[in-house]
Image 1 (cartoon, rainbow, N blue to C red):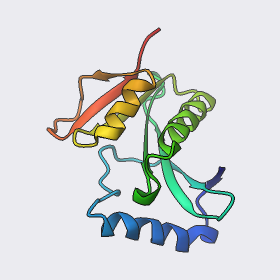
Image 2 (cartoon, rainbow, N blue to C red):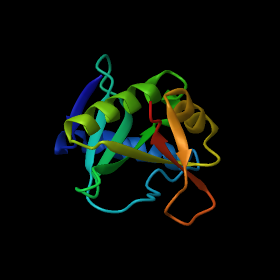
Image 3 (cartoon, one colour):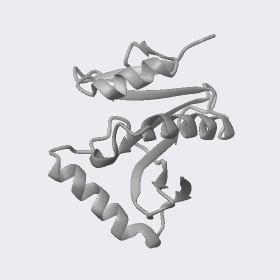
Length: 141
């Protein structure tokens, strides 16, 4: 997989990516945490297909908190891309000096919830009042 910052080169691929979510009845742009973020595109090398996106936001400097979110194209799910994106996110958070990465997962996203738990994340009390998301933090070892 290639990890690249968003650019004009991928405008059509990004448009096609969002269209597939829309056709699947999903709103991938439904964002829980606002603010500026870095967006990374995950492009499969063998065919140039955009399979996922990752967003990272650096939060409070003193707390070294940051949030990240990812989405996998519906037709590319259950192929291991989710764990690859989360692993990349954790590496990028470390490079950005984010010591407390936080991820919000919709309660009806059973695959996402299972992935977070299998990768060592634990549920935490959400600071955002909503009934449809769960906040995850990396477990203290």
